[in-house]
Length: 203
Image (tube, rainbow, N blue to C red; front, side):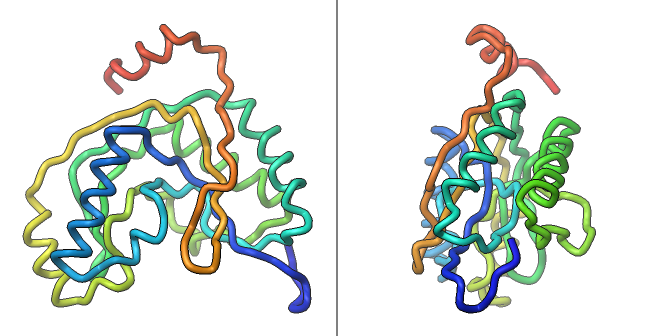
């Protein structure tokens, strides 16, 4: 949403937040990066996989944002998310790698298209780079020297996990950290039995 300087706005972003035990594992890893490598910025938000980068929105129209996102998200099915070891964006970012699946890429593209057409949000072009889903553990305050040491430690570490993402979170910046403002349920035709099967099926 285009904003004039005098309009009251806030920062929001949209993400998957993993359930336990992945959430707890990621939180412990973030804490480890803080204690061992002096990188604490990732602790300003809950463990998450970004679907739409931060954007500004007028606070007095927050209910409109929530309502429209609700209408979009409820029409989509839960997704299986697989985490496969660690990766990095040199020289500062280390993350848990998310396997790029066709359903995940499709959902993310449709969400971006919806945000552009229905919400007039145009900032999420990522310089036209392909979507690279990931769960950040350390980033902007990880010094280059510490990045080298941390990546030497984590490059060969293994981490495998998967979960069914059946909720999408809208997060809002409080001025110091990100908090979940609203969870939206992906309302599919899957029964509980189907969801359990999805979580254990390969691919």
